[in-house]
Length: 141
Image (tube, rainbow, N blue to C red; front, side):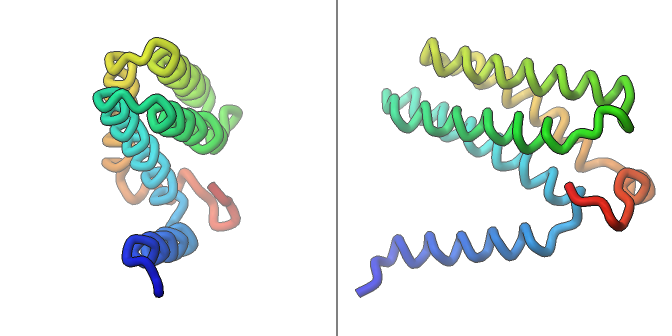
């Protein structure tokens, strides 16, 4: 017999995989921001509940998304000074997340979330014309 929770989880996984496969590069970056923000929120709850393993897992996931996903998708050479500043900001956010994990503190998580939300909101507001200029048809995120 199929556990209801595992059925819902499987459905959500398939739904996420479908969304990733069909998303435009701009949408994929938004998904990375959302994933990082969700992981930070989960870490905040884990800190409140004093659940160290869950806190560490959530923070490590957020760090991976910020460094491997967001920073890794930057083309610093093409982005020039803005690309360099974003790369440095992503490094700073990762440092704040590591600090939160080491000290079991929610304050650095809130700072990281605020920074990510600000960048995410600016990314979401990007006009369609600028989105087309950001990626050529052969680019991948």
